[in-house]
Image 1 (cartoon, one colour):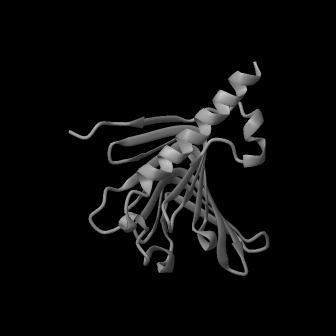
Image 2 (tube, rainbow, N blue to C red):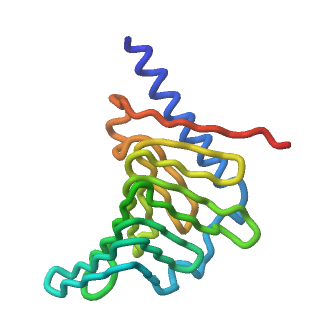
Length: 178
């Protein structure tokens, strides 16, 4: 039984390393520098803003963009701090995101039931039934962490300290080149 846990832990580590190599295959894989400097634009069917709680809620066919980053969802909740977006939580049947990591490279796309975007940290978390694609590579997990600026991807458990006790599986598909 112990050997099975060790092999599962090893499989998760190998999968994460394979993913990192897939997404960091060249120096050009860094996100467009201008993305984090762009305004966040939001379109939706409805919107509410509560100044006291500093929450802005958008519902119905929500489309949020920041530079080359685009998120489509049913609902978006923006948590503000001193008037600046601190955290954006998007949800829906399958909320989707897309980003162009660099000029001329394949877009990175993904989906999940819930997404959390932290603009100041350039961090996107995809939670529950998460899948990310780029080129011929696909990976799925219940939790995927994606650094927007460096295109660094981590999949599996939220907390690396619990990796030995992990029940989380990461599924990776790398298609052969034609």
